[in-house]
Image (cartoon, rainbow, N blue to C red; front, side, top):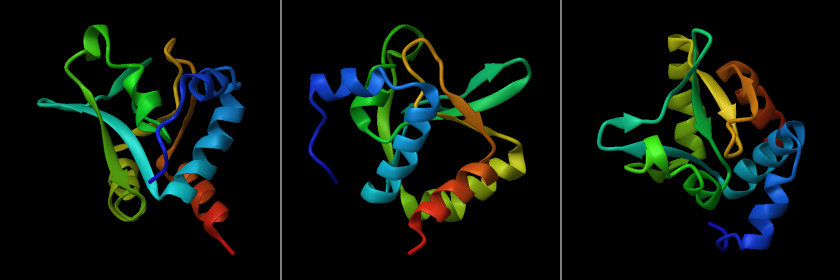
Length: 128
């Protein structure tokens, strides 16, 4: 696990384009061996957009915590270990046609990819 992000680091990451946040996400997830989502007593946060469902995920708890307001004020960042992410979550998401929203900013902007595509990106980055 890494040190908590400073406000300066959070602000810098939030200025990244969606493509930059995607690349940053994949590299940090591989480095830290963890993915962060948001959950509450009712389960994981799932976003809906034009008939598609997305699971928002981030490489740091602090970035996920920025979403803990309004409709999500009862949520908290929750860690998913990389092995579980690759072996259980991504196959389950693919089966359920659940997409991944990668590091969405507080406006909800981010790249949305299939579980298969995200798994390929992570495994490619992990390759020696």
